[in-house]
Image 1 (cartoon, rainbow over the protein chains, first blue to last red):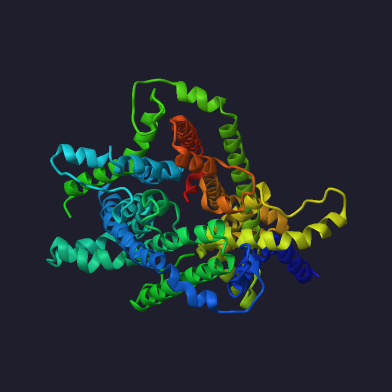
Image 2: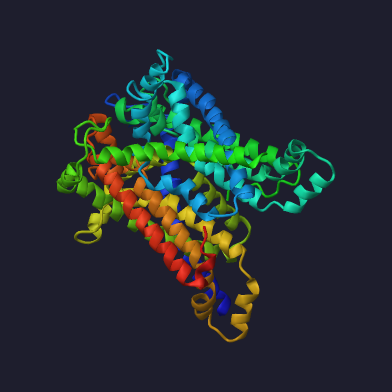
Amino acid sequence: MTATRRRLTTALLLAPASLWFLALLILPLVVVLVFSVGERAPAGGYAAGFTFDNYLNLGARFTAFKNTLVLAPIGMLLCLVFAYPLAYFLALKVARHKLLLLILVILPFWTSFLLRTYAWIILLSGKGIPAWLESLGIEDVRLINTPVAVLIGIVYGYLPLMVFPIYVSLERLDRRLLEASNDLYAGPLATFRQVTLPLSLPGVVTGCLLVFILLMGEYLIPQLLGGGKVFFIGNALVDLFLQSRNWPFGSAVAIALVAIMLLAVGLALRWARRQGGQREVSLL
Amino acid sequence: MKGHWLKGYALLVYLFLYAPIALIVLISFSEGRQASSFTGFSFQWYETAFANRFMLEALVNSLSVAFTSACLAALMGTATALALQRVFGWKRRLYDLLIYVALMVPGIVIGISTLIAIATVRDAINPLLQGLWEGAPLVDLGWGSIVAAHTLFNMALVIVIVRARIAGMDASLIEASADLYATPWGTFRQVTLPLIAPAIVAGFLLSFTFSFDDYVVASFVNGREVTLPLYIFASIRRGVTPEINAIATTVLLVTLTLLIVAQLLLRRTPKAKGATA
């Protein structure tokens, strides 16, 4: 009696989420999968069919794939390089106002992402930093609509997401290990390389995966700071679905994007686990 | 690593993070029509912004979408996280996979797939729904589809956060409650809920923030509905006036106030000490 009631309660609690997953995740992804082997209707949209032409044609969007697969990892690494010292500082060197300093790292998320990126359009275009550099004697610097502008936007937008997981793993670190390393005559650099860095690796991997996943689907930063010259897969998708209305080909591109992401993240997680003792690495 | 070098570096990073925001705020008080330079101090763009019916409509839409989605996500996410404690084997793995996929698939793919799914399904489903009763809700692009698509991601987020909190919970408390003849509902209300409340609140706030600021998903499934990010994106293309900056500054000010008030309230009630996300 009670066992039946328990099972009924569980089923009822799971029902709304199950419905949501079915209607808004499984069904849409199945539709995209079906569309990706279909044909383009003459007026745009989808016509029934079974062909792998859309997948064979992926090379037509080579530049978008290349840009994403080059700039997303570079952006991720830049975020890591800039975030690590800040996380280190916040976790190990700050005694007072720690909470305030942490809140200040995420506070930018509460202003419109679009407007913050727009502020960078102003800063990077002719009248902004280039004009300022010119007054210093450095002329002909073009920033807006270049890969550099896109990378600046990426670091600006995703730095806080990288700082937090690294901060958490450094904060948990047992300080006595650092003292022990020092007592054993290791220099600061050796201590960092042999103790601090390996112990913060779970945070580093989590942060990198988080940023990488978001960057792979990035659309706004290349759209606004790349000005149509530096475009990602996300931009190609918008073009294919909303402008040229080639839904089957767009679906194939979307499936390819998800497949590449799953593959990359799967490989990264396997690598991290094999590094030994990295059981803490997880996205969930 | 030397302390003062790091301090200097941290200062530079904060400068980097806040310079663009300072620029947005500064220009909101500008006199000129250009959103790219500051010319003389005035409040005129605040006046124009709060008299602009379209922008206010977009702001209200964004608030209602974000609030509805965050409420749904908090409710369904908490229910799912609790129920999954009792699910094992392949069913558990299936739900874990779905949560994982919902969080990993890029917003742009969620937006596109929801759009084409709705466009494909609505002609088949709507006549059926209409046959059910007069004025039955129909499947279409608009307010409802934005909320639904946001809720998918938000719900997965809440599940993950609440679950982490449950994992850190002392299971013996629940056993003790049962031993003391509390009903399952009583245990939930008096033991489990107070313990996981900070996680639910954190999930709600994150969901609200995501939904309020989302452009990508909404841009596909909005139909004729305009949210604030969609309005801002359109004005960036048209050429912005400092009106947008005035709205952004107001939103920032409101958030800051709420944050400070929340902090003060948390300090007054030491019970809520665990309320960190």
